[in-house]
Amino acid sequence: MLKKFTVFCVFFAGVQAKSEESSKLEEALSLLQKATMLLREVEANLDQVQLTDDDYKRAVELVKEGKYEIARKILVPFSKGNSEKSLQSMFWIGYCFMCEKAHEKAIFAFVSFLNRSADFPSMSNLLTEMKKNANKNLVKCFEKLGRPADAIAILKRMETEFPDLKDYIAAELARLE
Image (cartoon, rainbow, N blue to C red; front, side, top):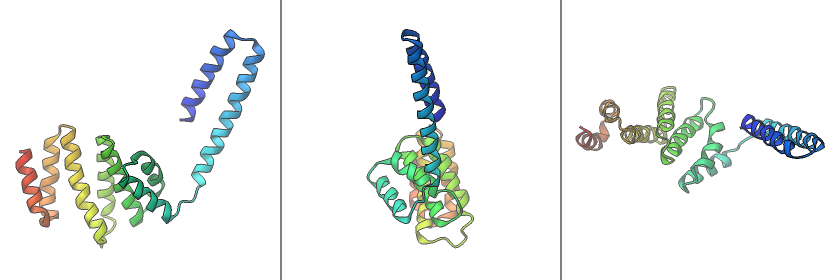
């Protein structure tokens, strides 16, 4: 983001300078340097922000309110690490991408969630439900991308992992095959 902004500003400053005096160019370049330093400082401070459990709860509320992009930006720092909350955050990020119709990104997030869930052998009921929903959401995403064979492969894998979903799986397989 900073590079695109800097390139745009340099271009803009150059164009403006051609039509004005050279002192205006110096002023524009000085403003550009100050803006670049300010953006770097803001980016550095964002990395140091300490997020709380309330921030996480608010991000999940934002997901439920349909404010996916804002929620995603809050959830990304929570997704780092190897805790139950980081795992849940990865699920919600995938859900946000899916709702934003960024299905390939959603698939990546859901697969990351499922892969990382293997690190939690005794999963809470919430994580187990999220795991079921992540698989269901993968089926939806693959279908939206016109990849029914991949959706069917997910459903076949779910047959052994989630026998309690046999009615859902049978209905989806019948619809997709």
